[in-house]
Amino acid sequence: MLEMQQEMRKVAKELLESGEATVVIGWEKGALPYQTSPVLIRSAEETEKLVWDEYCQQNLSNYLIDFVYSDEKVAIFAKGCDTRAFNRLVQDKRIKAEQFTVIGVPCPGMKDRKQAAKGVADVPLAKACQECRYPNPVYANRTLGQPVTPRATAPDYSDVEAIEAMSADEKAKFWQEQYSKCIRCYACRNVCPACNCTNCIFDQSKSGWQSKDINASENQFYGITRAFHVAGRCIECGQCDMVCPSDVPIMLMNKKAKKDLDQLFGQYDAGLETESLIPLGRYDVNDPEEFM
Image 1: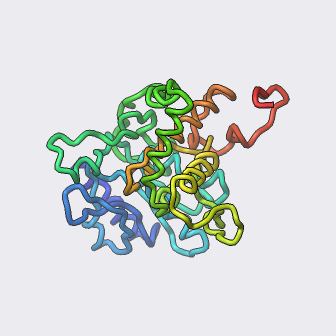
Image 2 (image 1 turned 90 degrees about the vertical axis):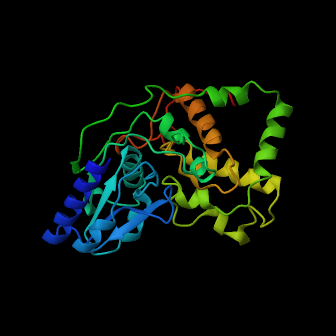
């Protein structure tokens, strides 16, 4: 990964010195070995901050929304999931592709920083990376390095099926226990590329949709509402699980929604391109109506 890191620094420096970019978005090292965070580079000298290691899991595309009304020329390093997020934001009309320079970086998989923080000797890959089918950029103005082989070729729903096999009472108990841990910090919402509404329902306290009480019932309403919101739009980057301080299995619910949509409307992987409509964004007279 060191060779790729040097190439990234070289490219960032060239872009900044030539004026093709006034800011480059990448990753920098934190205080601890397993801490790597997003960084905005604005000068050639700062490019030495850029790193590419096994903890560059953060999806950078969300930061592009902040530059929509800016005159700055923005370049961004992007893994497979970052480029899917980029396409997702373009499809949602939150950004315009031509505004930005996307530098694709094939991703070998990122380690689980939560496990690293616990002092685990052999830190495993993040679960989303273990199941990743698109580690290579699906959109880029320029791509560095060589493509990597995907770790998976089909969605893995084994964890979803384990929940589906439970009785109704067991499911209710399971999710109540999970969401009783939620502190409604909204970190999962804030980090999610599919949660990009200008005005979020959960910020509208006077609407009456949800109280500010932190309890299992209110938390489950939040979780279910958000899962429906990102259904068919989730790019499976696992950022929600990564940032959750309470270890609520948020992606498990997202995967359940994707599994159902795949069965009802055919397999659809969000963020691979920007032209097709998402499953819940299109209508066909032959759509299944078992719920009617």
